Length: 205
Length: 212
Image 1 (cartoon, helix red, strand yellow):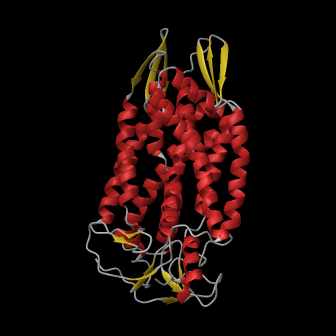
Image 2 (spheres, helix red, strand yellow):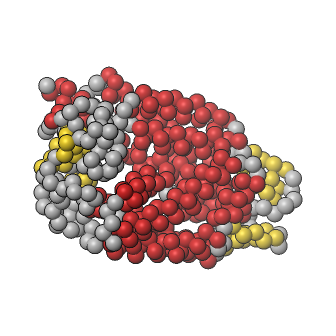
Image 3 (cartoon, rainbow over the protein chains, first blue to last red):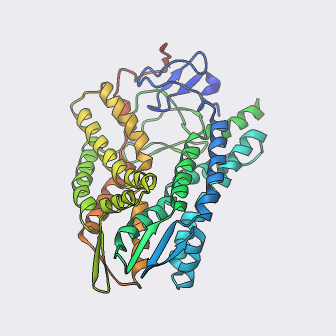
């Protein structure tokens, strides 16, 4: 199966019009005016930069408390992990699993998945292209679910605001975690899945 | 429904494909990577309008009416979506507040408003620069609307607080559920391709690039 690029055609990223472009990185789409690129420019290096930034920010996100529950003036700060453990200890195992998946498993596996795709493209690993594409799609869809913890905090902070009796406040870890979520979403967007399939054409020729 | 161009390329694997006639209700799938390329909807414009109007109407109570109320030792608190954001702002967590505001309130509102205006312009057959701008914006805003995640957030918060006091779901929760359904369906079903195809005169054949 031939790729559009091999035929000198470029797909407009915005309106999906197929355009014949004589040279790469040049010209605008005749239908919608967006810049035409056969592949997302600098996709790999941009994605790497975002992945590294996300790993760095995951450290404060997990070390600092994301939420503090204050009962009668006594505060118990919770990090992401201690929050999950506490939920499990209190017998709310299903909820603990949901929070664990959304705030620990998803961001970490997502970053590892993107790194696997980046390594595959860079070292031309002979992995199944179809499976890599499925991985890419999972990474794209699953990213938003990490916001779960942040939404939950915004609800709890308002709900448990009983002055001196009980109060829940957000913590600095939440700020770092929010940034991790945004950065990983941008990382997934900046990766061009067509690079995976380009490997196949390179080896066929 | 036959789309204009004789060829198309998969946006996920760049396979060059020949177009086939596609009846409504069927979808066109890339033979190489299984990506859904086209999914023509029956009457996308009217359906898009109906769903966007539904979600925009339900948004007003969903954002401002109580999602949950909490009672502990005779003290009552009420949670609404807007209050949740304001609370974070007041506590100094402006970055997190902005993010929650954008993903749960602004992006869904924008998305529904954009689909509504796109449909209105398409009905008026005004396929001009404004429609192009709105279509591009809609594609960018879409992925930041996270109402399903917020829904799960509400449920987790509910279960978490059940042992500490009395928690009740409010009217806002019912409106929120309906609004989430309408907005998510709208995003899933809205066929932007069918509108792009009508923009400009670019329907038949492959086009030469225009110098910038």
